Image (cartoon, rainbow, N blue to C red; front, side):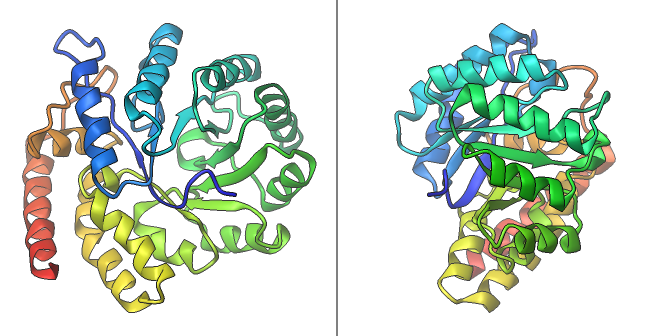
Length: 299
């Protein structure tokens, strides 16, 4: 059984002006998503600026999210690292702290061969003994998990259950589904490719868009599964201008601004990320207004 189906939010991490984690605002965001149609919370991922967190902050953030969610929706912890030992330790800690599953990005910078990727995920799954979702995002990591490697890992590890596919390569995703006979929990890692991956058998999306449009992102999935494919596709296409602006600069720069614009205080970014440019903020505001107007007409 999949850890979740539908739209899981790759949630931002709100900070105080001094850069410390704002747990009061994080609690508000968690409650917001539990009350909306969000199907899962993914904490301490790329969008959550986990790369800038200390080990202690990382664990506390995961523990806090589990406690605040109170079992209302699943919590998936980002525990990836370019050091396998660190990824193992973070994964074991997250499971002890109550995470329902783990999102583990491929090693980055030092990368890995395909054999190294097999060993990496095998080691994490063996120690964590909890559902592991591999995360393939070669544009950020410089490391791509080949479909053949995905299939081999799935066959050899009972705890590796899925993959967040953000390569943008539909042919590669199709090959993964073919080699695994569809026996993998596939999640789109790109908000502009939710419907295409659903058509290949995806269980949903791990989404940046859900931070600002949780109901609509969920509806893209639900409508598709109800057989209302044209409506699902129309909603996907309607969201494209907003999605484009959410990625006008390095994620999560635009989406943190978008969350603040909605009245939910996201706070600053941690260096090396800097605030969105005035030009791109203006475009983001316009895209948000147009999407909100279209959403009102839809209702």
